[in-house]
Length: 57
Image 1: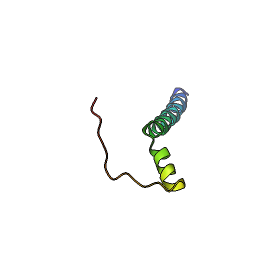
Image 2: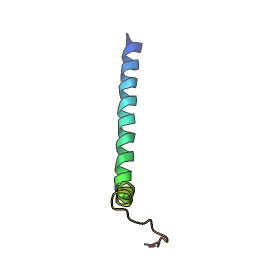
Image 3: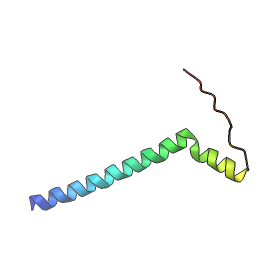
Image 4: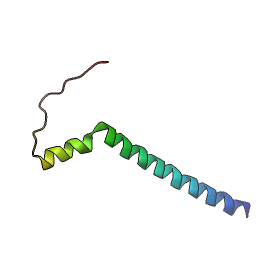
């Protein structure tokens, strides 16, 4: 009985962890602007940047 309950709790915890990782991944891609950049290149037919400037903070 206790073993079954522990298994259920463990599965629920794994689901929560997986959802958390997915949300973090989606959030980081939004922050980086990668999806926005790809959409702009595709939809607006923008050119990719030739050079990248680095701003050191």
